[in-house]
Length: 169
Image 1 (cartoon, one colour):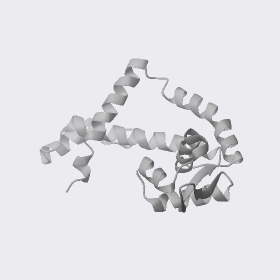
Image 2 (cartoon, rainbow, N blue to C red):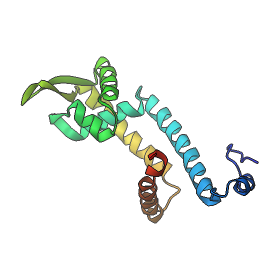
Image 3 (cartoon, rainbow, N blue to C red):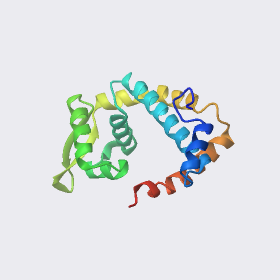
Image 4 (cartoon, rainbow, N blue to C red):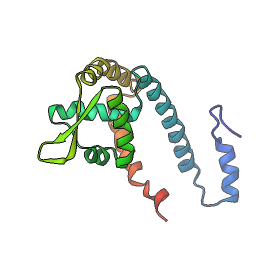
């Protein structure tokens, strides 16, 4: 009744659909496969970032700072871009600062605010890891053709548009 990856197989879903007519088998199969694959990708990414003593969250902040160049970003800009709370960002920044990868400094136009910038050590780490990161990302996506990658992006956008169905009351 379950696949080798622990997902209910088509037969198991068909049996459930007899009891729950709302169950549309292809939708549930697609969702379960997506969730399973997402978990696998997430585990692979975490293992990759661990090679550099980073988490996905810390990497996200470092790459944003790297792209922002010398001007840096405020904690609220990070939170907005990552769609997380300021408290989450503060915890990540505290860890990155302890590791001497980022530095907090007063915001130029308002000394009550902070700007976060990369330290030399942080810039060196990102510069060192990005070639490996981009190669691994390319290899992970190598089973898809260029057309499939574009289709995948479009499909994920469509899926994202439907996520409110799970959130809304």
